[in-house]
Amino acid sequence: MNHYSDDVKKRLKRIEGQVRGVLRLMEEGKPCKEVVSQLSAVRNASDKALAQIVADNLQHCLLEEQALGGDTGKIVKEAVELLVKSR
Image 1 (cartoon, rainbow, N blue to C red):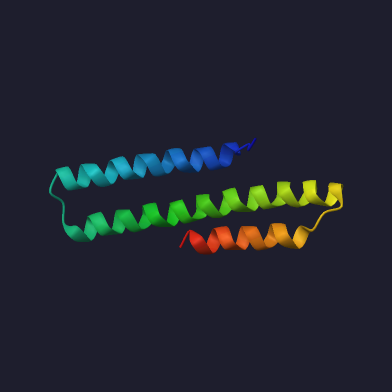
Image 2 (image 1 turned 90 degrees about the horizontal axis):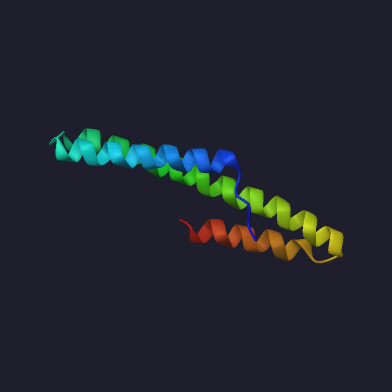
């Protein structure tokens, strides 16, 4: 079972607010430049949240695999593949 940090949850709640803000800008008919700027901020925040989730999971899995005497290289490879697929 995965445990997600409070920091990640806060980041996602902030992103949720940013998305609501983008929708509000669109509903108010704001210029494309403003909408795109805010969407870019959402994307950047999302990328940071994703990286944090992968990093936290990687750390947890590495410690677990080391304790079992397993192959940590495989765990790192899986984390890198996750990051690559997310792009």
